[in-house]
Structures are given as structure tokens and as C-alpha cells.
Image (cartoon, rainbow, N blue to C red; front, side, top):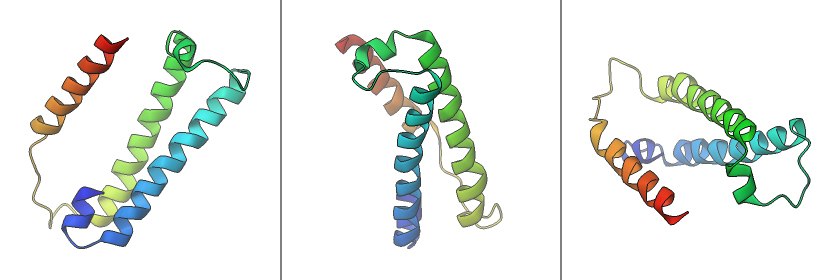
Length: 104
């Protein structure tokens, strides 16, 4: 979304963000229905359930693939886009993951 907004595609950036949010809710609902989870299940209990973690990881990989293969290729053709370094976002995600794991 940030990359789209920085090149002037604000409306398309909002569309990508909405897709990601809707996909997150739909994939969670599908996983909950496949696993036959009760509606009042505790979120911490879900994170301790290995089957839920595997299903959600697969769903996130599929969602990332959709974002990368459809939206990225649609708005950033290979011949016109200057690639940015991936190390800074990876470092931020690593720090966030460590913080979350220490808060448990």
C-alpha cells in the first residue's frame, strides 16, 4: 500500500489494503468453520493449537501469493520499478516478532 501511494496510486493502495483485511477475516472464518471452533474460543488457546497455526500459515502464504502475483505484477511491471532493499522491513518484523513472543 505504501509503495502504491508513493507512486500516486492512492485509490489502488486502499484497494490492496482492503483486500488484505477482508482476506484475513474470510480466511480466519473459513479456518474456524473447517476446524468447527466454538464462536467464543479464546485467542490465546488458538495460538497454542498446532492445527490452527498450520492452517493460518497456509492461508497467509496463499494471501501473500495473491498479493505478490496479482497486485504487485499489475501495478509494478518489472521493467519500470526500482526494487528496494528487503533488509529493513525484515529487521522490523523480526523485532516485532521478538517483542510479541516476549509479551506472552
